[in-house]
Image 1: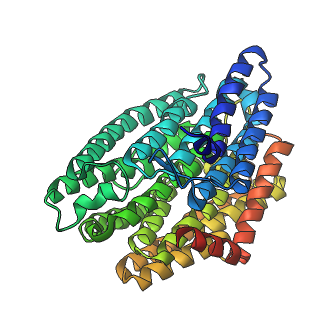
Image 2: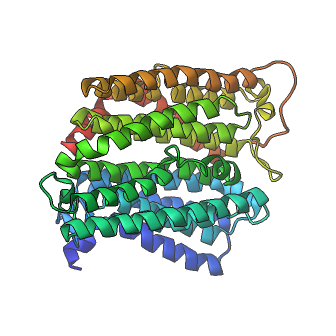
Length: 471
């Protein structure tokens, strides 16, 4: 590795080395609040480095890109890690989390997400994906006294191990068909003129099984509600935003390299998209647990993003990246509110726990309403602009049936999101005795509300930036 490679990877190195340093510091200085604060600063430093530094090379070791696209997602996942650690300070203190280990794991998860988003090789894709997946196995079950957390971690581990097997075999078959790991050359086996096309198709089928698991696409979504419910709320937010977003960032790179092979993959992706929107919507309608409702809703949202990817156009790819940013703000905000209402005894999860909280905690009630309306796609929020961009790209690409399914799913989602809002502002009865919102949670909630509204009212600058990244 040359000095130029080190400079190009500096934002990721800040995350990785900061993670290792805080892990060692935590062994001698067990001050969890201070360690999480230092971890937030490390993540912000990585984001600043990604913004300010210009990479002297386009690629490192033929594994990871260092261009504007990669740096954009490095900034995004670094911010998500910083907000997660800020959100975890009071939450972790209530549950006796070890600050050094917890902070190091969150930073290393952000490292893996940044590597995955910048992968230009099948090997880089595997390394990045497994880096943060292995960390999430631990973080999901980090609260050792919570039986649901242990169960969630075990389910994610078992299903994740199976998905890793599919991913490894898929990569091996793609390598067999072309003799290279580098994208897009590794995807050339899908070209109709290639003699190894059947092998490449089988490799893609295995790859899509692994990706379907990571993204919670139906029918690979069965782990999602249990893991969302059992994971600590800040980690569930990280899983719902950064983990899924990084996979989609890599999928955009994969999709751009497929070329003529899109015609072979389109029917399978079309089916996954339609099934995800249908199954996620029907299952979300029956939920009385907020975290499980968000889990099934996530299946629907991944279907929306896959629809934009299927458009196979600049407008579709722009819509994917914009919606990832908007979805990150909206979803992280909801989990921040769940964390803010938590106590040492647990989190409020059942809808009945939220009865009347809009009157008792008006600011937090208003914030939760904003996030839920944004997830439903109500203007003038970022959720509306994101869905509008996705549906326009789908219609321009001739995906009329999928667009209609998406609109119907979005309309139905208004019902199950408004159920929460109705319970929140019911004047009769009271919810559970919930926690006091600290300054840390207030900061994260305010940031997410601002991002949700600003991206909804003024989407132009971000859309122009994203357009320049993927052109």
